[in-house]
Length: 199
Ligand code: HEM
Image (cartoon, rainbow, N blue to C red; front, side, top):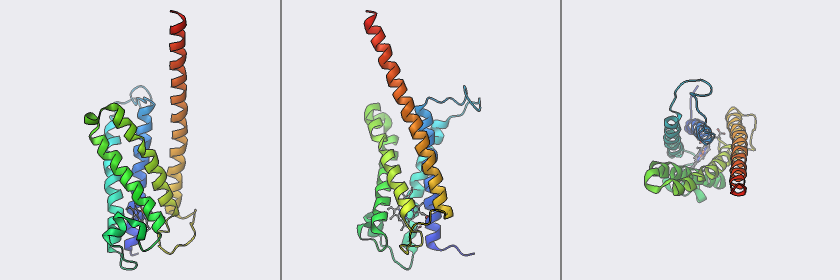
């Protein structure tokens, strides 16, 4: 079995999607204040570090994935087609959305690296761009034809099934996270109202 340049690029892209998914899930666990010591698996485990590393790995793979396309013979991708894919030889819209995902991912990883210098408020508002990056990368991963033939999307192809699974996982956990923040805000409001009436 031989692996073509396009296959290799697609595999690297799929692992990048997996790394972003892991990164988002760990980030949301932190937002829930999940403690692996208090809850399952009742062990001390520094998942903040894993969250950081999965971000660095995701960005490296997301950079490698389009770079591999430079080795493709037909169609040929020039560096400019990857950096600014509006005129790229195949599926320019999907590629441009992939590039937007890559730039947003790079922005989130770099600003996280500078977190202490930026201060918590600015860093956090930048960090929310990961949700826009995720929307762009899921659109790109689901709608690009990995064979570059402009074929209709095969929703049951192995790669697409993996991306769909990651997407469902993230949507479910994001909804839970949103419910958690709403409940927390409501509780805070109730406490401050009670404090005000007892004065
Ligand atoms: C400059 C940025 C990007 C460009 C120009 C680009 C371009 C492409 C192209 C041409 C394809 C179809 C050929 C192939 O499979 O390699 C593709 C597929 C794919 N891309 Fe990207 N991409 C970019 C960024 C990203 C990012 C940031 C991710 C995820 C983190 C990603 C994930 C994927 C996945 C998962 C597939 C394969 C889908 C499948 O197997 O059906 N791409 N991309």
